[in-house]
Image 1 (tube, each protein chain N blue to C red):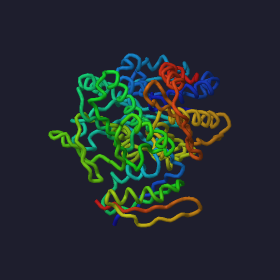
Image 2 (image 1 turned 120 degrees about the vertical axis):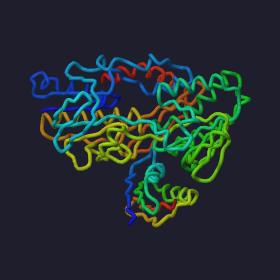
Image 3 (image 1 turned 45 degrees about the vertical axis):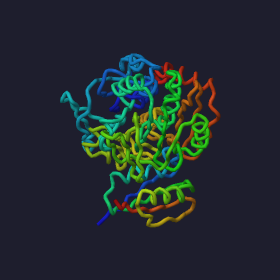
Image 4 (image 1 turned 180 degrees about the horizontal axis):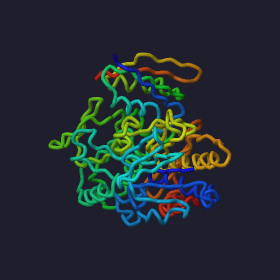
Length: 377
Length: 76
């Protein structure tokens, strides 16, 4: 049996290692061939970009050689897929190679979509790429005061990022001793300051206490860079001196261009994680159309459920469990404090007051992640 | 003929039914109807509130066995 994983991010890597261990005997006996295709020979720890943007991590802390993270049973190639031939159970890659599969898992992730909003790319800072995070850090270091507007597109990767960057900017300017010259102005698309009601209930008094202003029901429409004005779909206008955005995201170009899903989001069954209409094609992580958080932990828990199911399909011919919608997100709350939100399809989160202990655990997890990617944590 | 798009946001605490609707509306055509399925009773108030602010239209809102079916029309 040929199992093909497309994508070497968090979801693909955890799934590959999970399967390599569960199917070690079958791989050794050449009954199973486990192949991974990635666009890069490096594994990128994306959550670190938030810290890079405020100078709390360095770029070299965010990368490892992908091959060094993988179990020996995985046949790994740096060869991005250019065509998905799902009716033929094949993919074609940049090198011109054709890979056959019996089971295909697509875990290609997502990308910031700055072009969606006129003027956004030219006038806003964002931290969703290494280049963007470093440029934002430079702007923050030279900023001498004024109104900093935080603006949020949908859908976006990492649902806690809007709150986290706002708290971290507060700390950043406080440490630079220019907080009295800075007005932090947070905007959010719906009628409270976070999509999770309990998180919004916790964060709103925190904002009030810190003097962070906010405007809800604010969806970006366009940016007038010459006059430094941000306009919303709801009809309001905001002047800014520094614009920081959590941009809307799209699935990867190859997924969108191949027509696998609108805006690059692959439609899948929320429990089995198979692509609609396909029993042998699965998707995990950001690239799905599931109405749940686009976050590393989502990819992680989906990969664990799918790994168990693919292994059981090989061993007993059927899957054994459903994905329950589990997500776990740390929330950096500023002043060296953090909390977390844990939830699934049936149970909403109930975040506790932030503590230093959780913050330091998050800082530790930034290093422990590499064990997590190997499937050891 | 405008098409009807179904957004199955049952069990979506984050980003939640309204955020799912906002995202899908952006790529819909003017005149399209979108039906949101939500297990969150808050959708019955927060979706109409945003729809009014953003200048779209509520076509129907009903509850059926604990699931809210809210249909909106994109107006601009």
